[in-house]
Image (tube, one colour):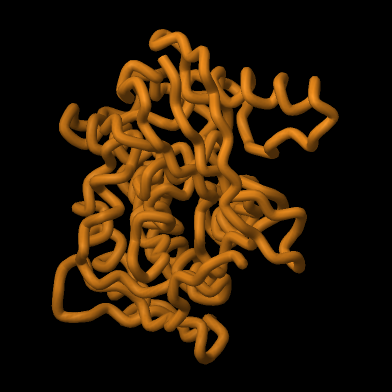
Length: 277
């Protein structure tokens, strides 16, 4: 099959970017999307041209680095799958495919389709961990946990931090990512001592990074390759509200979150999505 690609090319964050058209005449339907880009890059290198820069690592839907917007959809047309799990059989002979990077102020562009997602790392560093002394490794059955709680915690922990929720949200909100990280620890016994404080610190860092506010579009859930539910945003909002009511005011003024009337209301950051060029 033959496809026409319109790929965003941009040398760096300071240069002007544009869509560049490429023809890929011999595409095997069983190729993954990234393998198809590999074939194109081999052709470009053979011609002495600069290959297209894009992120990847495991190519098994685990690492979350293969983050592309394909025809306007983060990770492409296949639901519940990362870009590396999308195969060319999802497209048709003669299709025109538009490929762009994540577009959000908190994810500055590095080159072509590669963006800097270290903002997520800083949110995790703010509170996405258990720091209390838990002693030696306990037996797996020492702490009885209800099966429903185990499953819900695992559902939240499935987040791979790819940023599709941010790319899909009209406000470039990171609420689903942060909620998943807050909830999977807050649901388990080991995460209870820091539960409220964790929510407050991570939401504060989320605001500081410039992510936008949640306005209940639910685009994040639709784009998530692990199909994480927006229900976790409600869990995080409850933990955050509890922290605001019970913890000393240790968050830097202007960086805190504000829980709105909706169970999945967002914070008060005002950053919006914007083009990278």
